[in-house]
Length: 487
Image (cartoon, rainbow, N blue to C red; front, side):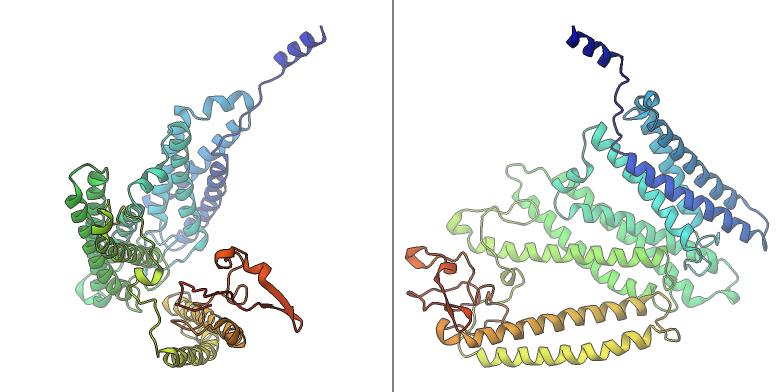
């Protein structure tokens, strides 16, 4: 009877509410759209002091307000147990996601257009940071909601699908978006300043804006072409080895062309007289595009180096080249082999390597001291690098890189002292490229390295001497494969 009573009580209890897997993204959309709505009202109020209201301002206010109200409605329904099941995972939620994504996209287009002067001024620079970043955050949350709904409710993981097409396929897809932003931002900058009489046009600015439109268009077409080829040729079929090689060759040539093109575009568009000089859509999209192309070209080069090793071992192991140019043969490839450098140390090169390492240490120390002063001097209040831009970021990035180089040299110098202190016992020497080729985690040998045919870990072959642990004399010859160091 007691068990029956408990069952009746459980049956009368209200159903437990299942938490939506997209509740976090809905909350992010609510907060970002709230900030964007308040910033939009403020920007419109400031503009109406010196210009009458226009349709662009009304559209910006309407789109971001609608996004905020729909996000608030969705969060409210998810907190009510009786109404949550009507929204979560249904077509109603999908419709809401499409609507808020569309309005967020419209808000980005109106607020970040230099012609409107709301979040970005006529020169293309950010004039209202809250409005600029909050509208982009709202758009990002809308895209995240759409991807999450497709993954959880329709069973299609977009990220996994893109990854299955190849490790560079996702980069090419992102390049389509960034090059479109480059093209659109350059066109907006041209319309804002160059849609005037020729006597009042800034000719240098207009020429660079037109070049930005061309750069974005060419990059978008090349990226679309590579994506279309990869989509049509990804599934491997028998007898299509040559086709895969052609696809890989096209990808390599396209990445090389775009890398050379955007090396010039990044400098030309974001220089002092270019439309991308101030921080804004064009500045960010240009440098992001350059970075993505650099990673794509580096990946293609690494696969090309791997392919050479594949073909050198093809007769012995009967391998072939798979999709993207990488072999199906399991070949141990070191980083030096991938970059084309020679790992084995040549005889008689010890002194030369020591000189190179000494020059590197002295150079890094000089540059570190120099850029310590340069970073403070150039980016101070009255310096040319005070505003955020190319000079500001490049100065601090250079200082950071030099700091890491100097730190690495110092660590290798400390390692060198251990190497020379144990040189007579271990027979070690300085390897290729300094002292980093010797593993000094346990005085030159890893802990789990077996002791020749006895298979005794080196950790047990250490003995106390003079207050610190020291390796015992070696049994037989132990040869390390890295740097050809005899240990």
